[in-house]
Image 1 (cartoon, rainbow, N blue to C red):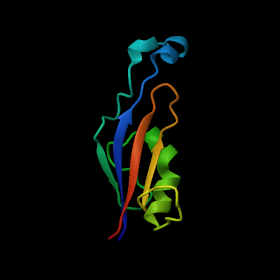
Image 2: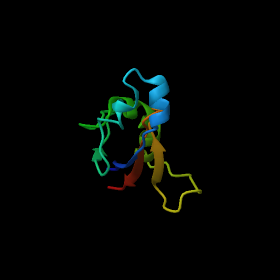
Image 3: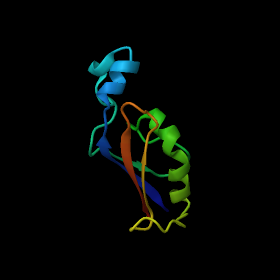
Image 4: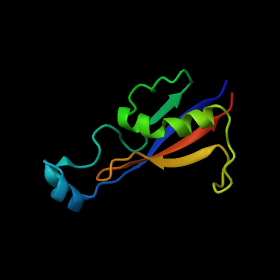
Amino acid sequence: MNSVRITVLKREFYAELAEEYLSEGASAGACPLQAEGDVFLYTGGAEKPEGLCPWAWIDLYSAIATLYAGGDENTWYRHGGTRILCCTDGIRPVVYKLELVRG
């Protein structure tokens, strides 16, 4: 059975945008829910892996489900079965690597 490994590659933070738009300003800092190097494993059933940000799950799920089903019609990545995506937080986005693990 296939699975999808979800790895946090990078956390970004745009302090100037935070100062202008967040109630906490720049003191909000980068995403507090994920850390670089965190790894999660999706094994099916539309269940969010434990510890993965629920908002990121919503943003990433369609790509995760496609990879899980074996869909890999993508030619612009060097390595098949891999996607690099981020959550939609425009001030403190988190970049994820999704990898199909064939089982």
